[in-house]
Every structure is written in C-alpha cells, then in structure tokens.
Length: 623
Ligand SMILES: Nc1ncnc2c1ncn2[C@@H]1O[C@H](COP(=O)(O)OP(=O)(O)OP(=O)(O)O)[C@@H](O)[C@H]1O
Image 1 (cartoon, rainbow, N blue to C red):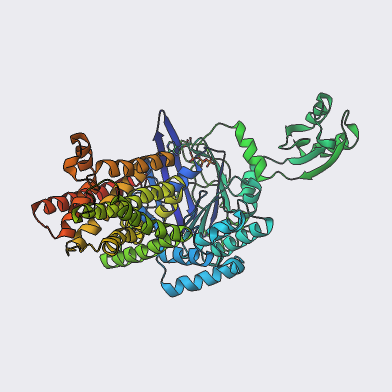
Image 2: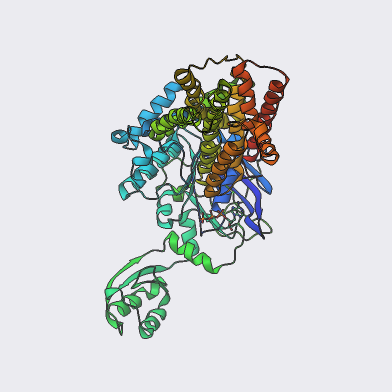
C-alpha cells in the first residue's frame, strides 16, 4: 500500500448557537512521501481537517487511516508516527534550544542515544548550533519558528503536519525549511501535510494541493493541473505610476483585451487575456493609456494564486480524490508535475475537476496497542521529561518561590503568636504551624497549579502536548509533582521555625508521611479542576486568590474551630485544607484516633475524585 493517508466521507460539525459544518464529506488520499498542501480562506476548515488527521478532534462521521492506523478508533496510535507544528505557541519555550529538541525526541519515544544524535544533526542542519544553549523564548520570532520546526522533525515521524511552518522566517530560512522537507520526503519517504495561506510559496513546494472552501475541498491536483484549468491565458501585472488609480477610460481599454482585477497594493492591477490578444494588451499599456502612466509591467503564465482567486466565483462543490498512484522519487518543488496522476473517471455524485483521480478503496487497519510493559516504560519516560520541563520552566521564578516559601511560614509563626493574648501556648502554636503549612500548600497547590493549567490550556500549548504520544496520567502527574518541590519549604519551615524560636517539641507522627502527600494531592486536585474548567485566566486568578483568602478566614486552621460562628465553620469543613489541617494537627501531636481516620479518608476521597474528574475534563481529544 503506498497511501499514507486515506480519508473517506469525513464530516465534522460543531454545535454552538448554530450548527457549523467545519468539514463536509471530505474524501481524498495522500501518497507516502507526498507533500500535500491544504489551502483555503480563514474558516475554510483546514485546522479542523488536520486536527482530525492527528486524532485531536473526533470526526462526526467518516473514516481516516494514517499509515495503517485507524485514527477514529485509535487516536493515540497516530500520535506515535506524527510530527506536528501547530500555528499556536508550543510548549518548551523556557528550555534551551538543545533541550527542547532532545526532550521532544524522548517524549516521542526515541532512545537516549538516538535523541542526542538527532538533536546534534538538526542543530547542524537548521543552523541552530550558535543558539543551542539559549532559551527558546529569548530567540527572535523566526528563530523560534525554526526551533519549533526542528521539534516537529524529532523522532523522524512518518507523517509531518505543519501549520504555516515558514511564518516569520526570512527568505534564506524559508528556503532552508523547504529544502529540509524535500529531503525528508524524498530520502526518508516522510509524508508532509502543509497548511498554508501563502499560495505562491506552496506552488513551489507541494506535489498536490487541496483548496478548501466552506468545509469542502473545491479543487485538488498538482499546481500544474490546477493552473491548466484556467485555460491558456497570459497574466500581466501592472504598476501604475505613484500608486495611482486607473480611470474608467483606461479600465475600459484594458477590459477590451481581457479581465482586469485590482491588485492587493495601491496602483497594482492584474490582467488576464488570451495569448492572441497579448500584443494588443502590450500596445495599450505602452502607448494607449489615457490618464495615468504605467511605471512597470510584467507578463507571466497564471500562478496557483490565480487559480485560488478564480475559485471565489465558483460554488463550493466537493471533490473526491485519491493519491497519485506512485510515491514520488524526486524532491518537492521539482516533482510536482511528475507526482500528479492523470485524471480518472469522476465519482458519480460529485463534480470532479480535471487532474483529479478517483478514490481507490482501502480498508482501515486497526492498529495494535503496545504491550503493557512498553506502555509503562513510555509512561515513566514521559513523566520524567515532562516533570523536568516543568521544573526547568520555573527557573526564572525559582528563587522568589523559595524565598516566599520560607518567609511566609516564618512570618506567620513569629508574628501571629504575638497577635492577641493566649496564643503563645504550645496548643496555639500547633494550630499556627499547621496553618502555615496548609497555607503554603494551598498557595502552590491551588493557586499556582490552577494558573499553570490555565496558561497551558488557553495559550494553545495543551494542543501541542496532546499531539505527543504521552499519556494523560503522565502529563497530569508531571504537573502535580513539579509543584511538590516548591511546596516542601512551606511544609518544613514552620516546624523548624517553631522549634528554633519557641523550643516547641513536636511529636511528629509517622502518619505525617501519609497526611502530607494526601494534603498536597487533594489541594492539587482542586487546583487542577479550577484551571481546567474555568475559561478565563483573570477569573482563575480571582477565584484562587479568593479561595486562599476564604481558607485563611474560614478554615479552623489558625483559630480553633469551636471559636468560629457556625456558617464559617461549615464553609471551612467543605474545604480540603480544613481536613488537611485537622489531620496534620493530629499527626503532629501523635493523636491518631477516629477523627484522624475520618480526616484522612475525606482527603483520600477528595484526591481520587478530583484527579479522576480532572483527567476527564482535560480535553485530550474533542469528543
Ligand atoms: N471548537 C469549535 N467550536 C465551534 N466551531 C468551531 C470549532 N472549531 C472550528 N469551528 C468552526 O469551524 C469552521 C472551520 O474552522 P477552522 O479553524 O477549521 O478553519 P481554518 O480554515 O483553519 O481557518 P484559519 O485559516 O482562520 O485558521 C469555522 O467556522 C470555525 O468557526
């Protein structure tokens, strides 16, 4: 089988306030090693199409097979063979360039030696050697895009899905990207799906192109075939002197020889005419213009852009197509004519333009799930590299977090014992110690985690993580456990501070080893839930800060619960920190009775419910 991608009757609708048909009955195939362009205006359905190819969005109906993997049945299977460059921000921005490439390779399942080797190769191939030690987010926009392109190549994926890969790149680096893609498709047989708005550029690199409109593919074929559809015409680009506008008389003169379209910039016009009328057109332009002088003009054959613009006048009729019969052997950019199969018989119910072949039936092959052992190893590797990424991302704020983690609890122990009478005894100190600890855990566990999840989700980074072959559990665990290190100072400092300042001798129960992780996890579950379900970052910040405020006021942490009015006590008892504080108090004083068990059970229940619900809420794929 030479088809890398087979799409049949693919439909995806979204129901918001009205039903939007983002992809409408798409059927086409892409050959292995082919560079396949997807063009179309904003909202045409390109992103929805590639999201479905990547298993990120579930089709409403239809089937997709990528390299034998049935994407609808096994969306994770396709992630193991795909490299994705989204339009949105990528993760790993706060790592060094070398690390960003290396970690991506490891997350894609490469072994250590292979990941190191390919990182070195790519640094060399993309000319990134001089910046290999710099943070990705400190590079220029174009260099960052080049690094992101390199990340998509890590793991030598069989399928590359690239959304506007040359955005922000200078001409030299654009050429570099196209050359690298040509090598990958020709030498390694990688299939490339390229989404772009740059029609002229696409013309020089793609083997075939699909033009989308209103969710449908309105035309599909090699650039040569599509241009042939415009007929045997000549194109003239005109530049009017001083960017002026042509008068009605001049437009009529030009219009008599062909069709005139205003260009995208002031003073530019485009004329299409039959070759026989070309001399007449040249005479009009050089001698006959009535009002304005012509600064410059250029004659050429029609481009893919002309095809694209001409489609605006046509109804959005669907196209059914198969891949060219054989994968191409030459690099992209020189192979477009060779790669295109001649037209075959159109399918019965649809309009099929010239140069488009009909779908050859293929059967989706359901892919096998990797064995448990391999999945476990992958899970642990993913966890390790995601955790490292998270830890390294807090490098810039690391010292502030540590300082805050130490100072806040010390201030509470030192200051609060002096507020009001009767708080200096050992019992009150115990409340304060646990309160300070719970406060630290709540700050990192709820506020920072919720905000971190919110940033990952709203910036589009989540889409990138989801496109990697990593498990949801490894991703969530890395997020949660990366906060633990930052929580530790806040847990340990109050106990040390109380001992040093007041010579308080705590009986630290071994059950603390159960209570502390549970407290952290229960609060993390709250943080994850807030970050996942609340849409706006501003609202996340307000909610988390309010929650911490309420915790301090309402939870019977700093004040014995019996001294609080009943409503506040009730609110307090709805919050995990309340149970955490009670359990901590019991554990610190060695009083491990029935109440301790109740507190620990509630914490456990909250943890399990919170993490399970959150892992469902985090949209790994849009259902
Ligand atoms: N999650 C969603 N919910 C509702 N509507 C959506 C969703 N995703 C896409 N759409 C709608 O589907 C249509 C196609 O959107 P899509 O993002 O696929 O277009 P596009 O061709 O990629 O556009 P652009 O070039 O602007 O990125 C649009 O009308 C869009 O509003």
